[in-house]
Length: 83
Image (cartoon, rainbow, N blue to C red; front, side, top):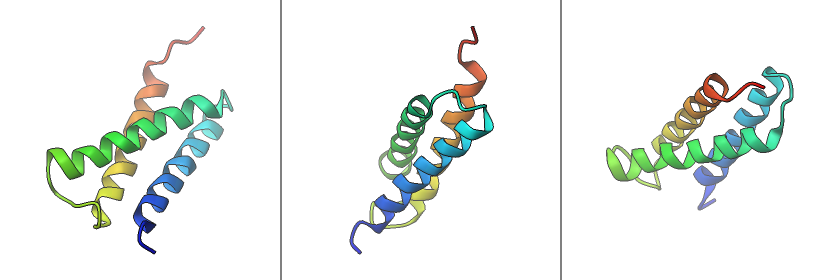
């Protein structure tokens, strides 16, 4: 499959968002999915364009993308406003 790494990255991002939503008391899947998606894009961009450690045909950028997603989710739950 030509775009398998993209499918795996998106599925991993959705899974991370779902786990984060479950772990924090089901506050809203939309917000966690948005934060996870932004983290995926940022992590992939850093791996491919900024640090040039990978290409879009390698699997290494998916690890960077998932790490970026996890970092963004942690930051989201640490710094969000609590009413």
